[in-house]
Length: 490
Image 1 (tube, helix red, strand yellow):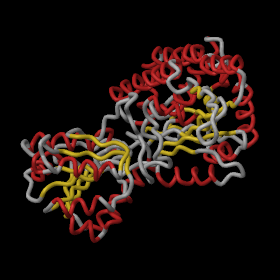
Image 2: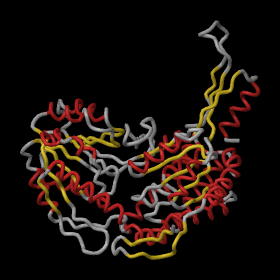
Image 3: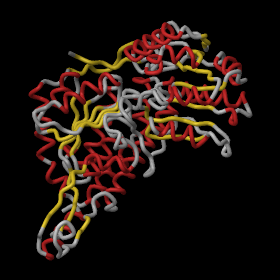
Image 4: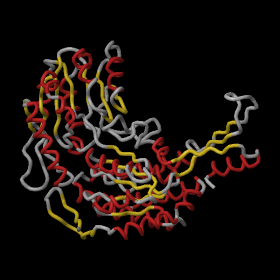
């Protein structure tokens, strides 16, 4: 099969055609990546940091070129994409800094205790080592920050792993050019370009993940695609960890104490809902409002002024429109629309569905449908008890948001209810806008992610690609030598 870029604003194809890689070509890429793994994993963290910084510097230097190309492929807009390039290079440097600091790699020495068991034990040193060659499947909606050089790649490279990235069909030219720039930067910095490799093609991705030389996988995308890859990774003869972020239906709970300015609140809600045309795994999927709230009328008025924006691809629009229709069929909600969609390109009019907690309780499957695009669901409730009961039964999600005054006695109760279901809880802040920082957690109970113990954003993402090893009963000299070597990455 062949793949060609498509401009989502016009629906027209452009640029070169890419032929899917064969199984033998994928095998050659894996062999190349494996051939430099030992050298890369054994390099001092300061040297890996230097190489990763070189990549980040090169991407920054080519920012305008990459933004221009990516805007043609994704329709996300140059302002948004410029910011995303900045986020991408920031997280590359941040991950490299964290790994070089020894925060995740410094050894833990447990001196021998001369006593009977269970108190007594030999001398032990617990260290970490890079897990191996990592296969990374990038996202459609972030052509930089969750793609070839996204957070998964930044974490894996910082941990000492070599990376093979499977390009996404929504932006193949952006992926290819990004990788080309990064590989050139590695070479210029004195490292092998094979520290980072690419494969392209649906079957090539499956071949990659099934290969016994791959030690871990990471993915950002849909539930169906992520679950299929997870099953593939865990059903291998030698199963491997697979860190999938599978999208999310995120709950936003609004208590009466928060509704002092309906117009401002409604505008902020619609802004968050339609950010990136709603193509964010953190968008405010379901907004729970008290019965009779003035916010409802304000939302109606605000949405009516909003323009349609392009989807990332034809398939993204098709999936969204089907899911939107399914929610409509289940709930038969009151529907409010924004401005009409253009007749060319991949567009759908913004739309918000209004329902009641009684109706969604009778059709709970509607709460599990992710409308990845410009569609929101507003659910009204009459008392806190019925809302808490509903929240207890929702699926796992990446983020839940709570709007309430600081002195509202119900605030801690609802915060705990959300924390039981999500990986991040925001207070008086919309779920969109994901900070890249040490304290971040971007994950959550299934189906939000395949591993609720880990994050794909922030410095702790590095731990996914480090394997613990303990050394027992070494002499003090050897123990010290090993500790120094591990800490310095020798």
